[in-house]
Length: 313
Ligand SMILES: NC(=O)c1ccc[n+]([C@@H]2O[C@H](COP(=O)([O-])OP(=O)(O)OC[C@H]3O[C@@H](n4cnc5c(N)ncnc54)[C@H](OP(=O)(O)O)[C@@H]3O)[C@@H](O)[C@H]2O)c1
Image (cartoon, rainbow, N blue to C red):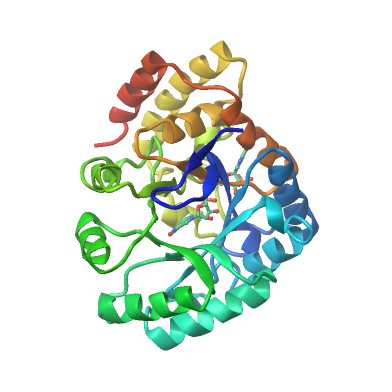
């Protein structure tokens, strides 16, 4: 495993991190908790030290599973969770009001069974609450020791500018992969310039960039993947298969699985600190962590970027 400093914090994070959205066991297919715990422990054994979760993942269940899995491993892991989105049944509600954040941080600490969150991230912007009010409450919570560092997720450049005028943030968590590169024009350069780290999510397109699908997968109606990662519609699907052909050739040259090519392309981009990758099984966790055992060459990165350009309009 390789480790990098996260932005201007003193956190040394693994360049592959573990995402635990799926471990909430809803909206992402069903998962078995004992399998999830085994996946988290395998990730830790493989050198991953950054685990990302959030209250809406399984309406708190993902945080509970993470809490259970890290019992006895607290010193080896950095826990990242989020505020500002909660569940109302199947609905996701955005709410960055001070009272909601205060409740959420305490609930997260209880579910995770820890005293302090290492990285607390604003999950999504909430246009109904002035950012100043949100930040003032977050700074109080930080002073109270509820969390160590503040990060944001899904913020565009304008919001990044607004929040960096108000307070210190160490990271952005954006959607970023060979199939989703919007942040390259504004947000990523802004972060590089201001020493803000990046934890990419959807780094393997929700699974599609493993190359495991010959046909577009059919997810259950309540599975959010096809909405959230809309790569399965024609004509994106056929173009993605062409991209995967290129990935397969490069993977074969390294005697590595395709998924590691997807992860390495992301984590080796300037400004990306960690590629967050979800894993439902110990096998997936180990394979994903293994990406950090080797690097793509500059020529391979360029070849992949060119292949990605043909998919991304
Ligand atoms: N901030 C945000 O708004 C936001 C949004 C989305 C995600 N996130 C975070 O980012 C993390 C990563 O994103 P993600 O989990 O949505 O998507 P992802 O990492 O692109 O894909 C993860 C899924 O791919 C499949 N997979 C993983 N490794 C595999 C392997 N080696 N071989 C075959 N299949 C494999 C698994 O599902 P199957 O086995 O079912 O195929 C897994 O659940 C999340 O878990 C979450 O922590 C944040």
